[in-house]
Length: 266
Length: 278
Image (cartoon, rainbow over all chains, first blue to last red; front, side, top):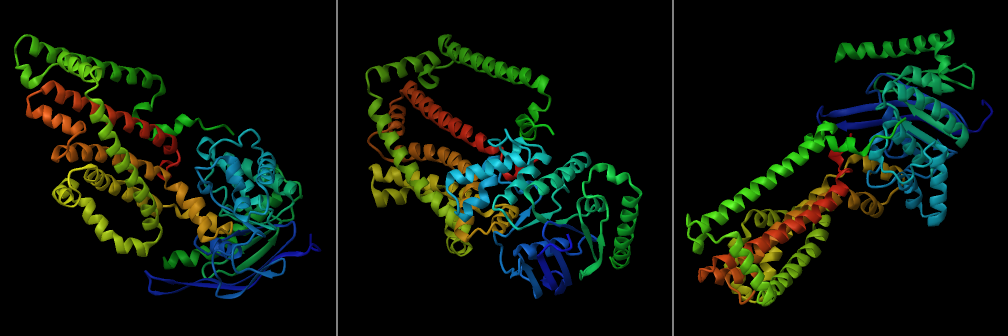
């Protein structure tokens, strides 16, 4: 892994908003340095409101940064592009489109493929995420877990280099979430993708990732980068191993250190 | 990993279906009660004329209305009136759709256009359109164009305002998704704004329908030489209560029928209304 080429290079990424209510500049990202190698899955955890999602939006190109650079495959990011795709929370599927047409959405915008090619690619992806037979269903007919599979397939459709997942399983019940974590690992292995994953669940971050980045409280910096030295082929059993517990405890303490001062202020 | 049954989404819409085992009986019970009350009313109405409790010259009776209706259709005297009213309706309502839907979409999409037109739309929407009838007679006379004008004015605002609301209340998440996939402004409009405003648009079309029927009757009663409203007006002036009743029933039936059709189309799209999400 350490010799794989760099997929994402973020250097000194700074971002500030003007907050209307507080009538002052709010620095959200205080200089983020983060690299992700090809084939790697890196998770970002941190205290709530620390700017994890904002960083992901910046990588996607939805938000402009004030300082530093974000490069994907060596090209500087300035707007959303086909080399990146975002997996949103479950209610972001278009309710008026069937599963297949939701997955086709990105392809339709790009107009690279013919109608038949788009349908072929989309139905292959619907199979890949394990929803063969549900292509003509509407999102409201699916369970939360199934909707998230569609969401992942929709992001994979334009064949992005980098997959960005913004707390994709946050709205799922605990059982479905655990199941989807394992499924995501399988899907990413099959699709051979690099991914940046945001979560507020430490166990989720550990089980999915090669590395976990812990963000500090706002203005966010990388407080720690932790290598997850667990076996590569992961199942839910890994949660029972002592090493898993150690990592979980370590990351929890890091986040606590950041949350405590905020609690005093707030 | 199970499929959520489509029924589950309907529970929120209709409290009556909360318990699936009792819902079928309860729905039938309501139907039976409704039917019984209507039949009882018709018997009471017919008896009141038959036993001399009320003067049928004023109240008519179900059998007299059926007879009058049969005669009007059999001798063909009603067809010209129906044809005239239908023509007014199709042209007035059609024009309102052609103008109201695109203008509503544009006003929902471009906030500047909305700012410019909003005072007029608001003022006219709040004014009872019937109050404009004298003006319309001055401008258009009493021929077909006056009826089209009043039906158009009655109908265009509910359609326009609802379509506009639909476009303006797009969920921000959908916009974010579209932008993330690199959608241009035009693509955002075609792939998100238009489809997500369909349910509101249909509501507008249904509300407009009722207003259009009012427009027909009022327009024709004000001054006309043919049409269902005109027929009712002349029948009323000559105490032909049975004929007036036939006209009322025709208008009511058309209104209920068309509303039902639009409601069925609406229900098809209802499941994906943003506020119906689980």
